[in-house]
Amino acid sequence: MKYISTRGQAPVLSFEDTMLSGLARDGGLYLPETIPMLSHNEIAALNGVSYEEAAFRIMRPYLGDTFTDNEFHEIIARAYNGFGHAARAPLKQLDSGHFLLELFHGPTLAFKDFAMQLIGQLFEASLKRSGKRVCIVGATSGDTGSAAIEAFRGLEAVDVFILYPHGRVSEVQRRQMTTPSESNVHALAIDGHFDDAQARVKDMFNDFDFRDAVGLAGVNSINWARVLAQVVYYFTSAVSLGAPHRKVSFTVPTGNFGDIFAGYIAKRMGLPIDQLVVATNQNDILHRCLTTSEYKPDGVVPSISPSMDIQVSSNFERALYYAYGEDGAAVAQLMDELKAGGFSVSQGALQALQESFASGRCSEEDTSATIAATVAQSSELLCPHSAVGVKVANDLRDPATPMITLATAHPAKFPAAVEKAAGVHPPLPRAMSDLYERSERVTRVANDLDAIESLIKERLPH
Ligand SMILES: *Cc1c(COP(=O)(O)O)cnc(C)c1O
Image (cartoon, rainbow, N blue to C red; front, side, top):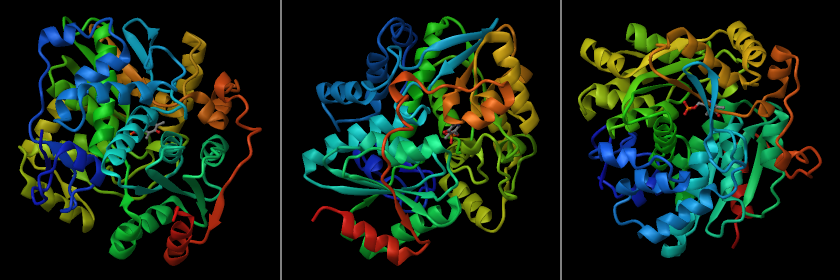
């Protein structure tokens, strides 16, 4: 299996190199040259197998000869071993025909664990074999950083530095980053906003001397291996509701378009998905684009579902690539226009996008009202991101087709917003109940590239 860039100008890579490099050299995102199909019988045969076995069968065709079957089985087993639920991604019923896919039983209580835990084990296996070592640097507004630190803690071939904006992440998110005691993971609190943290990470990747000296690598949501890991739970949940003999629909709380794009891949692989619904909060650039063709960032307005407070949705580029008939030059042109303020999708591409995706938006008031109504009607306490999904799903779903809404985080990760909306304090799961007692380890850093680079060099093992 070979991987190509959405902008058509980067070298074609193997799965392993795609995973290790993240972003393509032409600025584009990697995609498989062809999307493998699972037959009707192969999908039907996923019924009743473990999550790990389903993950193996669904992802195996994408890996080429990177790992033997045995190695890949072991990688998957280690990745999901720390989850707090035997089903890994259990389904719960909310209402007749409406189901909630709980993706928050991983170690940091958000769906990002599904991809990050797998990528940690993939990196470790690949690097151990080559004898190389990498240094992962990332910026986070909360969930990605905690998932990355948790996934890489204690691994031998990887060091991780996560920059988060000092004083601007929730206490649970901060503690998940600062309490792991392994010496290869480092939480850095930067004086500034998320955008400052993100800008310094970009600067480090553009400082080629530094980049080569420390072996810089990225695991942000554009990494193809992260998208791939998320394809699995679309299959397992759909099959448990009767696919491939029956169609199902999905609603996905969306920010960077990674999770919903995994659903699009599942559909292209042969899973009979009817509606694939993009649910946005008040930062609704994706909903606006899918309804009007205009993609124009106009500033983030902070919401109670902060992991979806995004104006430049990086994985949307992958959907555009297919909507433009796999024309890399057309995508490159749109991304140039985006740098100058925004773009408008062509009529043909808009039609293609609308055939693949429906969309809706949820206001702040409706997010809180949905948390309150759902706990009253179904005894289910939703996190604000999942509530955005449930609201949009209720607006758009067809009662004849089962709707699966993705619950992307545990309510205890966002206790203030949940308690305000529902009047109930969401308790942490048992395995994490001592989070508030664990000791923290964090380094405060100035918003200064030289200072951050020196600190990282100093901390790396020599
Ligand atoms: C990251 C995140 C999202 C958005 O997912 P994308 O793949 O970026 O669209 C939604 N909810 C939660 C809780 C998240 O952490």
